[in-house]
Length: 186
Ligand SMILES: [Zn+2]
Image (cartoon, rainbow, N blue to C red; front, side, top):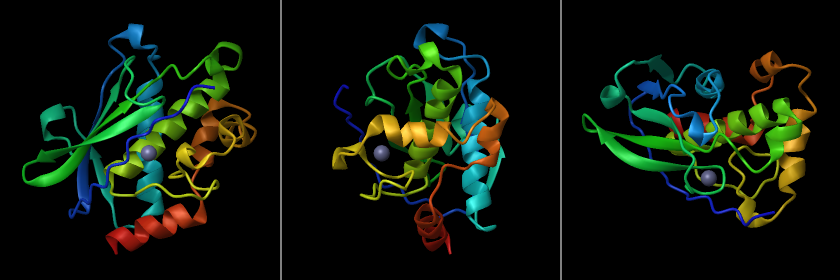
C-alpha cells in the first residue's frame, strides 16, 4: 500500500447557498468513467441532507461561478484527492481534485471502485465546506495519516452496497461528521 498523503485545507464558507460544478469525464486517460459526475453529485447531496437545511447547493454549468469545483485527475494530487482553496466572487470555495482510478481496486470489483470514488468526493468536498481531518476511523473526515486499515475503511462501506444505486442510501458519514457540519453552519 502506498503512503497516503492527503492535503488538509480548512476553507470556511460563510454562505449557506453554494454553487457547484462537476467536470464531465472528458479525459478518460485520468481513469474517469462517464457516470462519475453522478457520484460527485451524490456526495454534494449527502452534505446538503446532513446540514439539516443549513446548506443549499445549486448545480451550475459555469465552472467560473462555482464555489465548489470537482475535477477528475490522473495526477498525483494525494493518493485519492485534494481540495485547494479558491475565491469566487469574494466567497471562499475550493477546487476539488479526485483521482478516479485509485490503486487497482476497481479492476476486480467495480462497485468497490465506485465506492472509493464516491467516498473520496465526499471527503474532499467536506474539506471544501471547511471540515478538518479527524482521528476517528468512523468519520468520512478521518485521515489515513493516523494509521488505520485503508482496505477496511473502504471495505466496510462496500459491504453495505448491493448495487451502485445503494450509494445514495448510505451517506458514508458518521454521526460526528454530521454534528461537525451542523456546528460549522449553524
Ligand atoms: Zn483530507
